[in-house]
Length: 597
Image 1 (cartoon, rainbow, N blue to C red):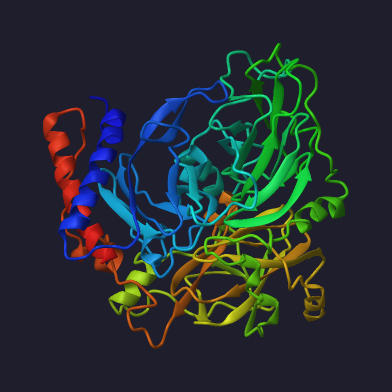
Image 2: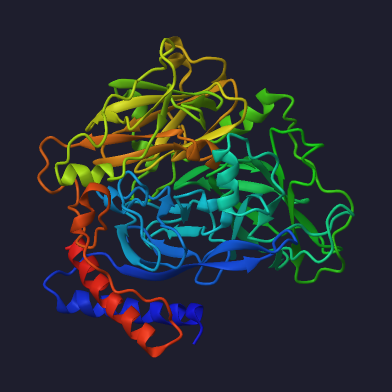
């Protein structure tokens, strides 16, 4: 039996086992479980016509969808078949009270090769479009990513007519060298340079002109005329902002990263690294031919970068011919950055729609809350620190300690990290390497200003939270700019772009206890140290504001001696290998059930 087939069939067995365990145990969770088994491996693929090593999940590139419903408990058993440590993180999933499952180095020890770990978390009060990806060692540039879809509960109506179907697009820039080679480039002090292309769902471009080589497999989406589809688009690339469009079709924006938006039609839309959007697209064109689906590089010299374009095909069921002619162009010109920024400024929250709860999500009057703290996080172009190329926030290039910070706190280790991250840029000190994080105040209400003094568009993400995007503008932020904030219907999301020479202001209510990552989603900047963490502790912790350490927690660094031996299973093609896996699953199952009790 092939490994991928075995894991796929065993997912069903695992889900059934969870049901039995919950019914027979002393603890009965109030919300349903969905369970997944992920085997993360290398496979060979040729998305741009060049054979290369990519990271697959259950033999798929991109990986399978995780689908749940608001408040469901989600269990993902991950088997690491790579030759290096692995962590998966869940972009935009807030992990309420449970940073233990976040899947980044500040909170989790990596899963060693040929070992497994089960993530167990609840999609508490969330709906919408998200994705997962490997957070270590630049691995996302080789794959390992896939979509996460959280549905509304049946009693919560959608703010639009239920679509006739769902389509997910994983778009991103792509290099024909794998992540280890790209790491070596950055380690040598060089920039990565222009990508080799853009992939749509792991596939290269349709041959729209003679510059595209023959024989490249491209994505084809089959639709029926007159139907409306919900199209979820995720930019999972390395570092390139992309413009997404479907020839002759309008994109009705309806949701981004868990919040319904005011419904606005666009002919094309800029999607920055790490961002997710939902659009409704009605198949209202004639079927004289197929239509182009395009994802092209933005905020670059678009003539030079023409080959860095992803092209797929939208094919009506009654189509009469192939797509031909030039690709459609974006409606905005990046040489006029104001018009480009205005597209993003047009994203507003749908204040009349219910979100995950049966009350209007706009009823939270964030604009009437007093701001308790301000953090200005300034990014600069990479610079040399101690002879190595590094990226910084406020002059600090983050170094992950060998013991995860949340684990160190739990075991009362001292000296693992510092809580002296500067709240504002420091101009009179040279940039430095440090394990310095923000000591944030529980139940505070803070503003964070992302000030981009770098030369490229950057995306920033905060784990554990959604934040209100209240303003963005060019120049340097000053206190008097608070008068321009949108204090009524700003969109709430987890990843925001910051244009070069510009700033973006967000407001955050610090109600989620834990240690949470703040990072540049651009992989090159993140890899070079452009991140920090917020440590949020309830001084009156009573067990209700944060979950305890899971029983299956992995140990590393100064706590490595606490790690219990796991059963190894290097082969799933033999009976012994399968029995070992089943036994491991049962052990993980019991640990996961007690975590939720």
